[in-house]
Image 1: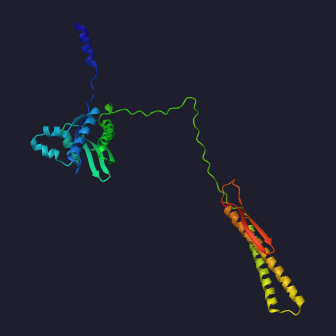
Image 2 (image 1 turned 180 degrees about the horizontal axis):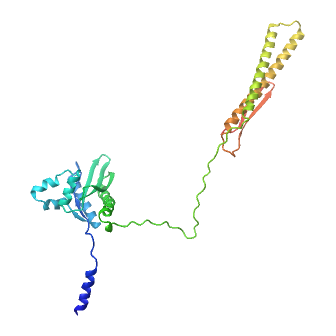
Image 3 (image 1 turned 90 degrees about the horizontal axis):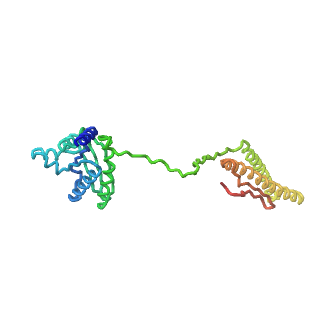
Length: 301
């Protein structure tokens, strides 16, 4: 009758016990100057409940105050929590592994909510989380998120076997769906002006000079007619005809010269277009009895 019981006890005795006890956290007095006391109380109690739901043992400041002798109570609880020595003293007095400090700072845009965790062994920071611009009705939610962000790195540092394992989700592929091939990036190149782009400009400059010569000649004939420095009417008719020819030749030369200069300018302008693009702009020149005209036909880039 006792053999099954003995066998059960022997099996239970061989089951390994947990190597490490649950993490103990002291919730130290908060950093909340100017914040109403009822908000501070709610915040501390909410943080304690959140830590308990994550499997941590929690020691409140009120519990620590009852454990300390009256002579040490003021020196321990009233020390400067910004100093590592104070955090070590608080953690050792509460026999806690971690000292957790809640931060509540009120601004015009809302509360700045924070939660910081320090190791008792050296008083150094293990993890922290802050959220700015939190409204009063969002304080508890912000504290919940802060505890969820702070506890995992603390467990990973002090209780690796109790830390939650975060699995990276694998990408889901639809059966039969071919892999998406990245589209090649096409970088447009730009061509430079051809080597003969200066030729129209040079020809145009020559024609402009020729036009100037004919214009001067037409001006001389006109002044001679105005001053009537000729011997007979036949000489006057010759001067009039010569002046008209020189004037017409001057107009033609100016039109052709301007077209050459404009052509070179357009070649340099349009040579910056992408290779393979069509040139949609071309120069035009026309000469009539009343003069000449140079223009552009098309759309500029």
